[in-house]
Amino acid sequence: VDRENIRNFSIIAHIDHGKSTLADRLIEKTGMITQREMQDQVLDKMDLERERGITIKLKAVRLNYKANNGKDYVFNLIDTPGHVDFNYEVSRSLAACEGAILVVDATQGVEAQTLANVYLAIDQDLEIFPVINKVDLPSARPEEVAQEIEDIIGIDASYAPHISAKEGLNIDQVLEGIVERIPAPVGDENKPLKALIFDSYYDPYKGVTCYIRVFDGKIYPGMKIKLMSTGKEFEVTEVGISTSKQIPVDFLSAGEVGYVAASIKNVKEARVGDTITDAYNSTDKPFPGYKKVTSMVYCGIYPAEGEDFNSVRDALEKLQVNDASLVFEPETSQALGFGFRCGFLGLLHMEIIQERLEREFDLNIITTAPSVIYKVHKTDGEIIDIQNPSNLPKPSEIDYIEEPIVSASIMTPSEYVGAIMELCQNKRGTFLNMEYLDQKRVTLKYELPLNEVIYDFFDALKSKTRGYASFDYELKGYNRSELVKLDILINGELVDAFSMIVHEEKAYERGRIIAEKLVDVIPRHQFAIPIQAAIGSKIIARETIRALRKDVLAKCYGGDISRKKKLLEKQKEGKKRMRQIGSVEVPQEAFLSVLKYD
Ligand code: GDP
Ligand code: MG
Image 1 (cartoon, helix red, strand yellow):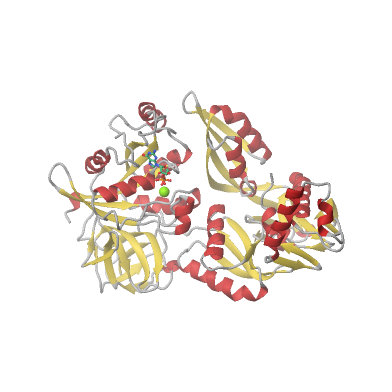
Image 2 (image 1 turned 60 degrees about the vertical axis):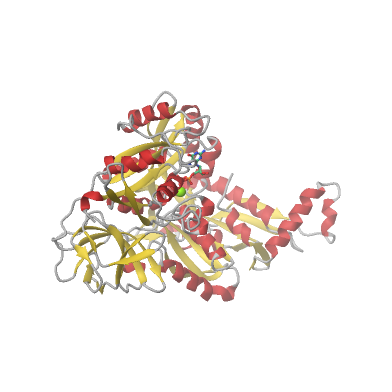
């Protein structure tokens, strides 16, 4: 293909504004995939993604388009994940493009992730092509939203097509706009190979397949390539383009997007953001911006049945082959036995992995409370990173502790400002500033401890703003803080899986809430069970699960029978996932319940 006739672009949007639906329409209108072939939303491959309506894995699709000017164009549509946990991957896929279609919902207008994604795109010097979606809805206000785009983002939106991705309205304006608004790639195919990896995944037949954007040179089967971050060399076995399926080609040259396979065994050897070059004739500098992503959130993952340890390890290994940002190492818990400490990019990433373990691998697992990495400054001068609260040194050995802080940006209709400020205050936030985007909309900037963000911040924000506020954050650094280890004792026995590091001022409240929760979720036994929350040897909260009476249903008399029935059913359900702690049976949901506190 002639480089002049290539267009490489992504679609960016706030979640639910219609990115995937528009991608489907573009694919459909260019005839690349027939209606029958096209399962709903081909770009979101995994079931889990489809159910949650999010895109986790990036994919690239090549489309052929004959423009009104009579010329044939090649479009490479690069999909990006839609969650802050995956911002680095988003930045790499944007780096592979010259432009981005910005989809804005005509009923919602500009929201936090609209802006966050626009900034990511502008960082990569992309041309932004705004499109106003969902104009079929009666509450659509496309002119106002166009004005909003101009006011808030500062780009001309007067030519933005007014479309309905769902009904296929004005999609041709988008196709023509891609030709006219998005620049053709530049590059030199006579220079040494320089190609950016913007996605990689494991294929059991071909090994790791990398999605790449070639900036200079050519890549072809049989070529010896080098990955610039590691210096490792491989021989290319296949290059190709992906449409509805992967189609091998003779070569990919400067400006093109496609895939490459080279008998690479693990995605860790071909990380997103790395540069591929010719092993015998290397480009002098790698493509800028490569970084090895680090985990922000950790938790323990334990088999519900002791003998499943090996299955959990196998499953984690299988997931890791495809997910370079998942880390794990074995650990032991007194309460839970042998398991793994796992690290994730964020809470969503953690939930996705937990769900995949349960659904795809059919495992029963117990997860401990998530934790962030604390920097513990010991009295002997050593500084250690702690990801598992149980490993915190004795108080006498600790000089002070630092915790990770994020800078958060919350966009909201102005009527919720009070409620959000109260919430952030409650979460130990530091107010930075407030900016009116227009008469009705405000951006609040806060610094928040990551450890508060991972406890139900999203849920609380959503419920306080009826879903209208949106939220975005990035790690800022570490701050010294008064933190303590909160322990939970069941029947006098410390259950390490419940231990967590919390701010001193929150310890009492958190301890009381957890104790109350546990009283609700742990079934009664033949004996009374004390539940205690403690800091060191100091008990700060105490509840008791009363002993079971002979006739279980006796307690129903005079009470609310249907509620009791529900309770019994719930206990039956939980039965299969019980964990013996001392002489007490603790259901799996108890471990989850400590994560939420409402
Ligand atoms: P994404 O999160 O940006 O990928 O958004 P989706 O493409 O998954 O769309 C989110 C929801 O909006 C889905 O229920 C779509 O059916 C719906 N949607 C997308 N485009 C339109 C549109 O033009 N009109 C209407 N009424 N709904 C739309
Ligand atoms: Mg989507």
